[in-house]
Image (cartoon, rainbow, N blue to C red; front, side, top):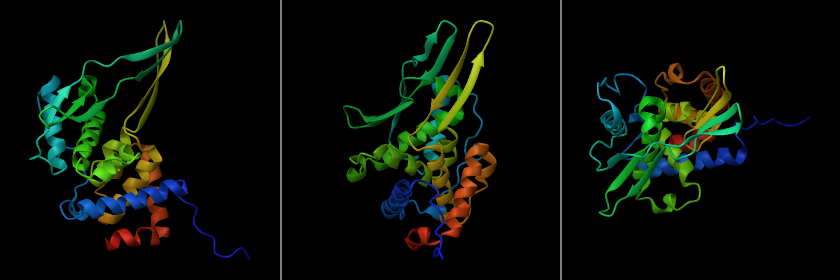
Length: 253
């Protein structure tokens, strides 16, 4: 009577089409040097991040080297610098405050000599998931820096996040995408929110589902994802398997 019912899109249809189109672009541009089936699923384990007694900037450099190695970029020249401490916190009433980072967590640029430089907010040294996510995002800027059409596109920050997923560090990007907590004591109460990256949590879940399905192995990432991200990822996996035509072109590529 109603004809064949189509599965409802996991994301907004335009966002879903955008992701699929840009996965195709990333495979086309990087599939030879960074084939997906050989891309590791990077997890917060000692296999990828050996223990270190370093502190402060030296610790950030250690993590930076680990992220570069995980992305196959260990031989790429790139400097790392700490930013000035970030200004946080916004008081909205005498005893109520909203706290959130107001300055960028990281930046990517080229210095006067043409050397790429990444900066990071120093408070991230004590937040390893966020630090890895930020460094992976900025290194993805470096990876994309010679792809002028992608860099100049108005969605380049979203494509950069998608590149993080393509490079195998999507677990960190997804876990850092959004966090919310309440704090308080005898003198004040408030809320703290933090976002990292540009893709929404559901978009990260969809990207992780595509990554695992194209690799034909999700690397056990579910154990390391926030529960809400993992639930969304499993729904996205089920949706992709119910609609195999969505990944048919990407599998062929």
